[in-house]
Amino acid sequence: MRAGRRRTALRTAAAVLSLTTAALLAGCASADTTSRSSADRSAFKPATQKEGSQITVWADSTRLPSVQKYQKAHPDVKMDIVTYDGGADGSTYLQSKVQLFDRTGSGWPDVVFGSPTDVTWASEPTKPGARPFAAPLDDKLVPQSTLKGFAKGSLTPCQFDGHTYCLRNDIAQVVLWYNKSLMDKWGYQVPTTWEEYEALGKRVARDHPGYLVGSVGDTNSHESYFWSGQCPAFDLVKPDTLRTDLQDANCTRTAKLLDGLIDAKAVTTKGFFSQGFAKESGSKVLMAYGPSWYGQYLFKAAFNAPAKQIAAAPPLTWQGETKAATGNVGGGVWMVSSHSANLKASTDLVTWLTTSDENQASAPTYPAYTAAAQAWLKNPANSDYFAGDVSGAFEQAADEVWTGWSNTRFSDATAWSSVVLPALTAGKSLTETLPAWQKEIANEAKAHGYKVADQ
Image (tube, rainbow, N blue to C red; front, side):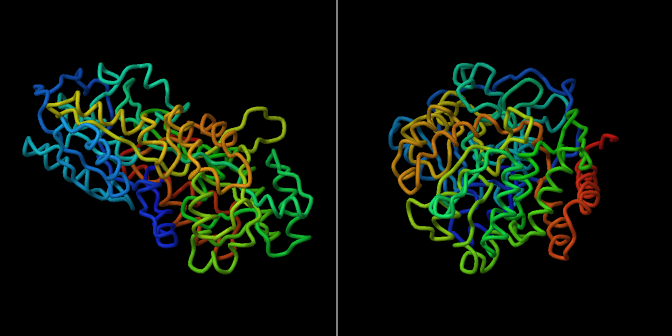
């Protein structure tokens, strides 16, 4: 899914799964390089309101049925529904159109679905005194009681300068997936720590050559491992200043652990979604540390694993640490335009889309709103396939996504894909590639208007 932000990973997944990329991950938008400053930001002054007026809604094809469902249930609301790419695959279509509307002074959609990366520019004024595209939803539009109902940290990508500019549609918290049938057959215990995961991976490599406990070869693999490891690769210490320190102990320990498993051939450098992997090795994935959507869209749809084999366990901890942290591999957002002449109808729509059981219980991916997520988990379509109840693992992980991996104006997948994946293919280790990865992230940050903090 940010979706997050930005993820090209599901471009590959889409090819394998015949699933629209935007269903899980939204693309990366190019960025306005102006620095965010509260001094440039005026208090929110709504446009002249015309309750009952038509609202224009831009949604991707995956979210289109949800918007249509709302329209059917609310026939009194006048809506013009437009399908667009939703920010998938790094599309800048929305930003380009908004820039055009800003120049012409009209044409803005009232409601849009997009990626968390879109919020980085949509929450900034295009010039001093101007209103940003996205309306601050916490400013008399969405009650605090509703905002507090979202999973811990899930609205962090929406929040800038003390305001909340979007509602999170879905999240993709990372959990430990495993083949319960094989684990039981071989007498293996499900690991609860990274050290146990490492030891079991090496044991699997020795006792069952060819079987795997993970992959680092996809364009989002770093989010599963390094984000979960609390590696400060993308740490906005100030709105305009990025800290990227891949020599931090949290980064090096993750790299060292993975290097050992790669050397043992327990973790593959081929992507789960790479060409031919499902056919050649899909049945030999014993464990996979990855997002909540892996169950349905990797094991079921791509690997064709039989029902009642695959299970999920909570995020791993490091020995000596009591609280787990995990990553997030996707998730889109809904924004309301600050230019909307019908904020009431627009806000009602995005609130219904993100929080209502009526919509979210049948959504394709895990809702960010906690109560809706419980309804989603009770839906047999989201649970019957698994070997056990995934609710506990999913709910725990949803509140443990580490917020130190910041939402930036550029995709976190680009440097990983352009520098790290080719290095791994060439036989280099993650540990020796960390400096080059850090340099590429820093270069991208500077190109998108960020200062890079000294380490």
